[in-house]
Amino acid sequence: MNKIHVSILYIIITLIVVKGYSQNNNVKPLEIMHTINRLGKLNIKSFAIENKLPSTYIIGFFNKKNSNTPTKIIPPNGTISDYVLDYLKSALQGHLNSEGENIKFILNEFSAGQDSSQEETLSYAKLNADVFETLPTGDSTYLGTYDSTIISQNQNTGLGGQISDLLFGLIKFSNGLLISTSAKGTNTFINSRIKLKNRQEPTQNRITKETTYPTGIYTSFKQFLDDAPAITSFRVSFDTKTDSVAFFKIDSKDSSGTAIDSIWGLAAGNELYKYSNGSIVPIEKLDNGFFLSKYVDPKLRKNHASFWRNNIGNKTDTHNPFDNKYNVTVKIKNGLEFQATRIDMRTGNLTF
Image (cartoon, rainbow, N blue to C red; front, side):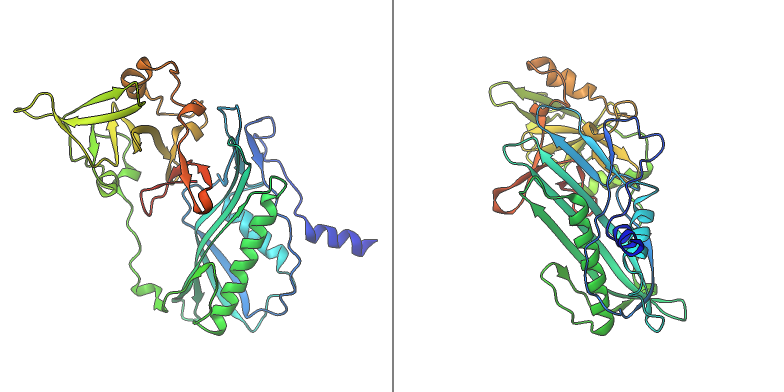
């Protein structure tokens, strides 16, 4: 019986409700299900995790049909980095090798969610991590980047199982890199080995440090990162027939303005918006990234979309910018779509 109990403990990480969230119906901790794999002895002695995620605590969201309030998915205990580290320590017991190498994972993306707001329920799990070997000298050698996404059209598929599959894929990938830098995988991107000390670390963008934003239109993602809109004098027009918004640059020679064709987003009244297919979506800084304001707890939300309400909402039947009517979706392969939840700070695109 003891062996059975031990096996069950290794197969499932017990769901622990984070204190303070247990009474919140809009927050749900996520458990990871162990995937039984015969890994054998790895070439890995130890591993460490560094966080470069857009959020330290938010894994993703459940979006439900007929509900304007998404449910936030969080780790069952601690930060996402702690969550992943504890899981791997448990799952890899007996597989690590005292004669192996020390490695470090830099988590760039770790997310999962489910969208049942459309005709078909979809779920996803995404993992992007840089893999480094830590040398005895203290230097680190970059080995490669693991990048994989699992999409499921089965509403009974567990997100915990998808995440487990991705993490085991990361371990297998890393173990292969320690054997040969020419390891191949359908969901991976391999780069040549470079020394971390010669690798230029990304600098923090101004937009992530500012709390006030000058009014204007960003015609590019770089302008947004620099918090430097190119067009500071403009007017907005909303077409009630097409439910689309247009912007015009105003100058001293033409008060009616010239149509602005290239728009990434805008700042107005210290509110930020992402432009998308004729609409503007309220966004705001949350943790280390920028999320759609709809996905920020209303009690903590800073962007209440006053600019949207004054220029668009008062001309429509729905005066709530966070209503499902104004959901923005991200298209993926095979014609599938997910609701956008945040800005990809590497590309400037809406993502989930």
